[in-house]
Image (tube, rainbow, N blue to C red; front, top):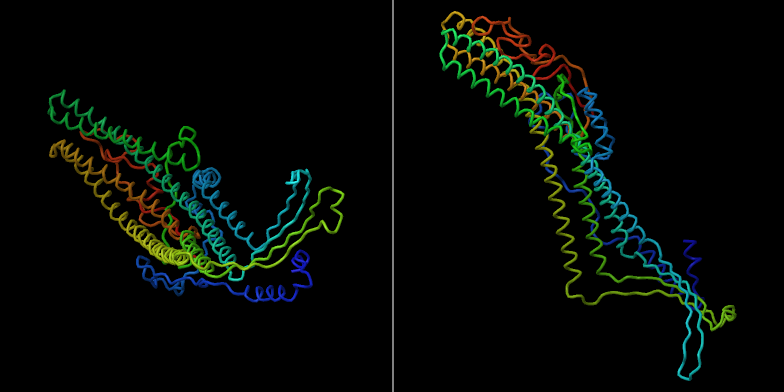
Length: 532
């Protein structure tokens, strides 16, 4: 207030009236029209439906308290993949969507600063030099310089509500940035895992094609010797060509995942190449229960809640338009025909005084503006509640997916074991002459399909884990556990049709993953738990 007293020097003649005006303004300045913000209730359940029943170790369910601005750890580190870590480090600095969200956040901060400028007076300066001829024909010069200041007193809290709205909008924009980063990281993780599963499927198809080529050559030899029919050769050729077609198709899928990863890391596809490799990263096991604190970390919920606060403040801005504005203005300067006369007291000019202005009739403009602000707030409330519901759905979906995929992997492992055993028996019957080649081809196809399905389940487990972590707002704490649902033990090698031994890396003409002893479609030996 000292600076204000220095600027606005009030003549003694007007001191009582003006002082009363300022005093009233300061007293009224403590209030702000419009509703004060209170976060509306959002639909919530006492516990996650798809979480295991025994969840007492996590304590009681508590109301959500947004923590979307809390620091997030490198959640992808739980997969223990250095190449994934390297790709994730590039996302934050090179992804264009993240850069756009960061620029939008800076715009929101600038808008907040613009709103805060309303707290301060506006000061201007002007200077002029005129030469004019009057009606008498005399030519004269006029020189002037002035300094002016004006300040609109925030009597009804319009500026404060606008600042409140801008601040909430900036916080929402910050949450949008965090949400974009988390979503991009989760998308990269999914693409990377699917690319690695494509590598596994390609290796499986390579071995399968090699097996089918050997089987076809054997059948051709038998046909040349007169012990096999032409139809047997055609069936073997059909089986081989079908596998070769899938071998080509999986390369298309892998290339698309690699291109998607390049774009996510801010590079053109030609600048990124990921070498194929056997993949044995751990699939994190879902904790026995998930505390609500993890759901509170979701930045999209935080953004929706902050937009409610911004819209609520805009109601106050619209309501303040009903009241008159009170402003103070002051100006002072010099005006003279010559520079020498500027120091003369009569050539000094000044003015100071308050002004009260209000709208008497606007045809319903202010009422419509307030109704619009109220409707906008109601919209943000609905959006917030829908965001919370969608968050619960996403968590429930992926909790169910993680739990049921683990069960599905157990059943699929049993199916794979049965398919391998059946293939070994059919091979023995074929050598004994009690089974046809069609029986062998059918058993081979069934075993291959079971193996490929097992790999597909692994891929779904990887992606489900990544999406679940994203749904929980990012961040789990790793707790080592023993492996569950290991791959079935590899049975003794069975010879191919006609007594030809299977090539290395296959089991009864069914390819066996090189890392079968350490990788399981149900997951690797690692688990996670969440802490409050």
